[in-house]
Length: 283
Image 1: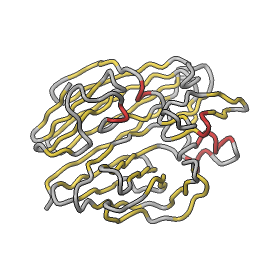
Image 2 (image 1 turned 180 degrees about the vertical axis):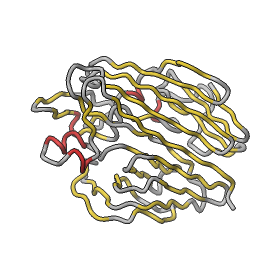
Image 3 (image 1 turned 60 degrees about the vertical axis):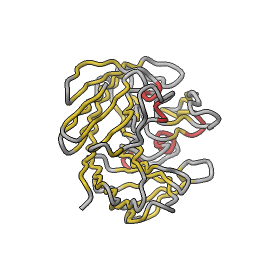
Image 4 (image 1 turned 90 degrees about the vertical axis):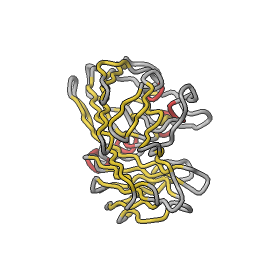
């Protein structure tokens, strides 16, 4: 499935986690992009939705209201549960046109996540970029934790530079889980030798990725941003998210939900998120 508007083309794979197979501006890849039929998993794609949580839940065990819920270790040998369940499930197409598509995923309690929810995702292209919206509704009979976000892998070209403002950064332990929060102004750095895999909070909602070919602007109403790249990667992951990594278990250990960005949805209550990827030629 492809959406087109002006110089922008977006290829989507509903059956493969509702992921974006590729995003091109005048033929230049904006996101990590693949040929039709080349993807085996959404983890190889250009972008996928993070539903109903972002990043990792430590030890693949969800601590919630005094109960330990074992989760599936869904990323090979990694000991944690990662990036929710939506990226590993088929999404249905509710509506589609030349410039937009609406996808949906209905989750019933299973080993991946013990709470029922419905989720919709809308993707819309324009001449200047891609707009994405996520909505999740708690369909269980009890309050449930919820989080949303996206995991876009932006193409890292020569002289790529990332810049954004934030208030803090969560330091990571060797187990890839957050330990302490430290003040941070964000990043303004060349990506070639940047080594980062952190969640920033107090994000002002705009991140820039520039190189000699394109200027990409990521915007969102979400207040946290996970950034991941190193010198072995040909991408820069710039991920708007609603909460800190391992937020549910940090909350169970005594941290305030507000500090972590953790949302607790009552039955029937919904959580919304939006992200836009603006693209233009470098000036």
